[in-house]
Length: 447
Image (cartoon, rainbow, N blue to C red):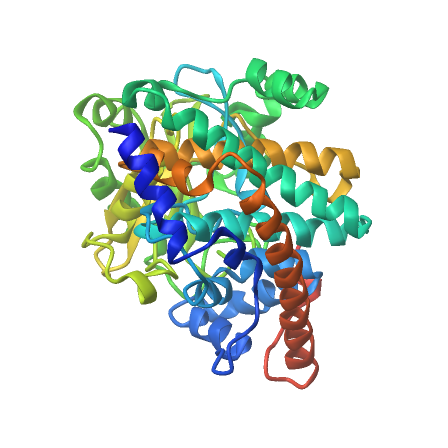
């Protein structure tokens, strides 16, 4: 079957040659990027939108992080093989990272699934990742050749690992993971072992976060406000009670054993917490629960909205977008958060819950050398290939399409460079929109 699937994937080159992926030319009817961003604003907390735009304004790289909807619109008009799978939907460099599995083992993987959806083209994820390498390289002032090499290395890693996974048994793919030993061997990075060691540091545990986030004075513990980034909404007196109710509904989504685990904790407090770039303005909260004095757990409750790809691939098939995110994450990740679950709140909004920052580390792309970026891009390409192979019914089709030559790698390097140009033009559009008052950005409160 694998040989037949590889042949089927190879045949897809007839209608979508690998070289065709090199081209990016904005269509004449391309939507205005600012209009797409403003469409994203619908339903978000309006008081937080100036923070979102201030973060996007900082650089083309931060703009790119918040512009998933713009690229989704662009990607649906680009060539693709017709081979569909579960996609992450927002596979840029900073949506990968290291964390600990429920067994407390190091894992490197994709770690953001807000835009995940079934039935997307696998090329969309690879192109978003490849372009993010090019955009990041420019932010680091890399020479064009070095930047192109980093993109090719990323895509080559995806292609070669997808070929490896295509030859594996299904269960072996599901059991596979990128641990610190595999990571260090693959990229010869001392940072890999340093990242694994960092997972044991107290700064990545609930016990370390507790004194920073919680005040016990005046009776019951409560989350410390740090407006405008951490706050209890003054104009919404029912906020905490509503989060508590949603937390109770979330428990129903868990398996019985994990439901029993969560039942040992009692709800204490909740507050909004502004996170990321693309998520700013969505209803994202931190939830404090205690099993006993000193036995603390922080969860993150995050609003789940329709994926930006839903406009192009159709409805997701789930009534609850929180469930869509959770199922997509479980399909694509090697190991998922012990507390991952979802709920639809009484006001009709969808949410998913997970641990807050528990044993998680991310890459400091802003301070990477040229060599660091290329090596990190290789890891991300590998992780994306593993995620697609795990979620895809026939990874051999993707492998057959990619082949074993560098044709696809070279095409994506050209695409990434062209799209980095487009991203800079779109960022300039945002700068102009802020300057002329169409968009409000508040840099003073964006950090």
